Length: 351
Image (cartoon, helix red, strand yellow):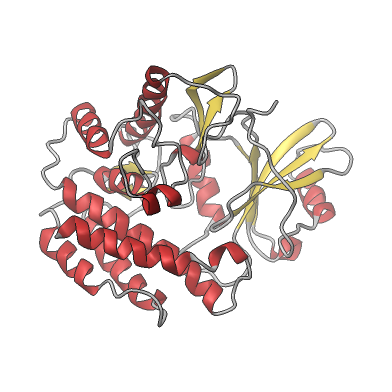
């Protein structure tokens, strides 16, 4: 069905040792038969995601990117254990089936989870999915509601209190991303010191709350029901989830939220269909979220600028790897232009 999210050909240099993986999964009790067809999902600037299609079962495998990675990033077993703990209390998380810490199999940790069959709303909705503005608004609210549901989970009862350091999250994030900005700098990338200084001067006096946050909550990380495309049936990519300030999560989400009246460059960078008629604007998202969560959100400008700054540094970290020959994916060659644009966008917001 053309609406369903499709995996494609595996990128050169990112192949998997299928026989060794199958042997491991059978030892883990999955009882698989035959040789799987291996395909790869698009994206891949961060963790790599594959589809293993056995004659009687389809599985998803997640592994870190090829090459250099940040010390604390791409911890596959942390991601898998978080999903395992979250599964009983947040029904939209995929079920983890096996975790592997044996480097002999593919040289890194990885995990395998169930496949949720559905539609992933990427840059554009599938051509066959024609939604009216009112349906788009319903979809938009349903997606935001899944973030709100996550933020309302009692993470301590779920046994997830060890996932993060709790209060003081905003300051730790600000310090950490300021350091990453320095480390990822290349001679052709912008200097973010002015933006860091503004963030330090305009940060809230304390975290708005402490809860479980996703840290990469976007439309292309949700799965929609193919029989009812307004219904969210899955939330993916838990790599960066932690315990922290929910408004930081919201700000990170809004960094990707290109709306219809944005400039052509930002609209050209968009990775989700937030430009469609019926989608909430960024300001409307903040108002809706704040009302549902009972927050006054007097520092929304800080959270929005921080989200953009963080996204700029994520983009620049990927470019840094490309610039220094640690990855060869040609789509990363232009990322420094995106970094520099995001720098200007932050400056415009704080002007």
